Image (cartoon, rainbow over all chains, first blue to last red; front, side):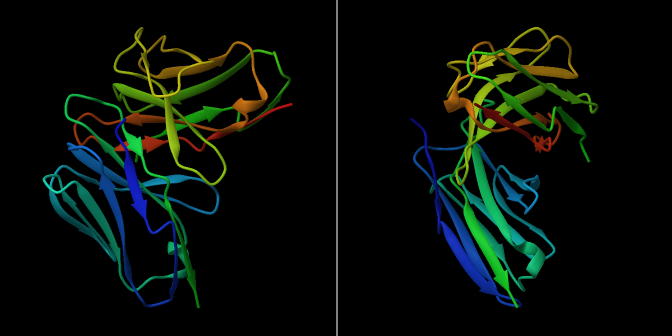
Length: 109
Length: 112
């Protein structure tokens, strides 16, 4: 079936640094959403993208439907950015969102 | 921000017993979803609903039923709970206008 592959599975950053998380899709997806799951287990919606790039503070996300991938860039990482980041994607004509397995981010001082 | 409330927050059930997880949203969203999350993994879709009185099967519907009696309420029912259904269950609703998905805080279910 349709799959969403996230990488890396785990990432460690020092405060003030940055990196990129990636999702690859095995089929053409219509849109993607990114979520942060914090230490309490709550899932927070970060972005919804049907195309292009969106930015919010220190986070920036890009979705390339044609090449079947999406990225989430984190810059100037802070301790509170620690958590697990999930992407979820959907095909055209479907309301089903398929989740990746997540990237566990640890930010240290 | 969308408000999605799940109850209970946690539950211990016995094998073979019936479990009902409830979800209530106050933002007039049409779409609602039930996902399960096993420790250290992503979320898998159990059931979802486009509109009241209608539900659709997700990717792992076996052993679960869903009920959407109104736009605001969406329940997940385990008729015969099994050990393998121990997990955290998340309900979500979706805003049609901007298509973003909003989650409740989750229900931790332990089946013993």
